[in-house]
Image (cartoon, rainbow, N blue to C red; front, side, top):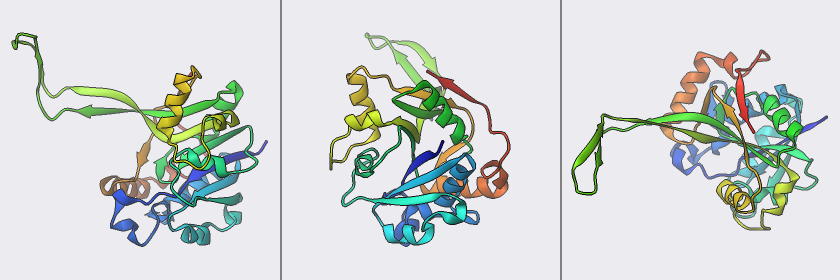
Length: 247
């Protein structure tokens, strides 16, 4: 069975300026490869044969670099936005969508097993599955807990808050297209809120491995260091880290 992935590669990369003045963000180098090539190679290793690049900003540069995808053993097609359509809006421009497909940002460095995510979603026939990983945020300050009469009832020194974040990687069924308007900007947030309002289950796939969005200069430099220190962590055929899925 062929697997189809849609890579969102049309953003302006505003947070990564001045790096993205010349190159589109998906072609920013991570070690010897652009981050987009790392993603395509990972998808190819996970058994994905068809990839659609949703492009807009500096689309011709991306097309010239990726071409047909033959050198990576995949078939690449292109979907061109005439205006920014958000995260999910571009899906309405793509014809002949398979029953299940992967959607992801083109600027993510991760060692997630994309094949395992696909199988988890498809075997359960989920409508939409969000890959998520844990994060923590430590307060820079001691936190005062107050009573209504302005007396102190508690104090926490620089507490840590744990939470789960979207990895910018999703599995979807064609059924999500019913929620997405034509020719309008429509994001991930719009989709999940509309699905929950309609009492339509949004599933998650918990992952405890490595993930980094390279959208900010500091994160981009971290990604370069991480890839150069251990490239086999991201481009390998071996066993992936264990993922824990929630239904």
